[in-house]
Image 1 (cartoon, rainbow, N blue to C red):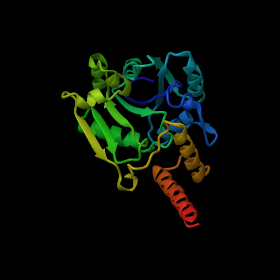
Image 2 (spheres, one colour):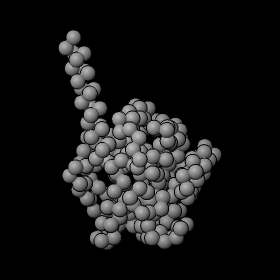
Image 3 (cartoon, rainbow, N blue to C red):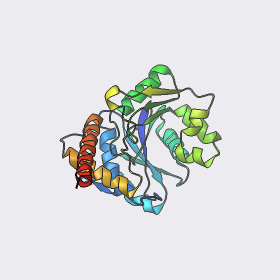
Length: 239
């Protein structure tokens, strides 16, 4: 792989709130596998795993290779540096940043944000209004490399794009998500044990589709689960 754009998926096993979550099972597949299958479903882009050099992440690298995706490794506490490594190693001109916390990511978001990045000449594009955990960020390689060379704050190094969004030399654009997907109150990310349980229920509600389900189906499934939970609570309160 060389040149152009790629989806760079950050993941590690050492999450402080939910250690090992990247390989936690959701509907018979690991969380990272769910993210990968969605990210490459409609994008036409290669997916690359950006993880750490820690021995704990060797298993994650093995999973990535089973999924047929390339692996790049970098500092544990400097995620921005990992993205700069990917840009340099792969000769990229643009990156779609994604995280393995998000097994219900909108599979149309990578192409949507990348297309806008290229058409507009911007350095940064993100969808606004999607459920938490459903979006990605498209970033120019030049902006990433500049940020990696200049950012010093720990938050900027860990979260990759805050420095770029503040950089007066970088042009950042917010896209309004498609109307049917604008549900920012929904939580489709996995950060805690409760999140993992909720995502397992959501996948169980969807059932085993032959192909990754559109984000709209996840939203409808979440609404059904909420409606049943509300009805059950009303029944309890009425006793």
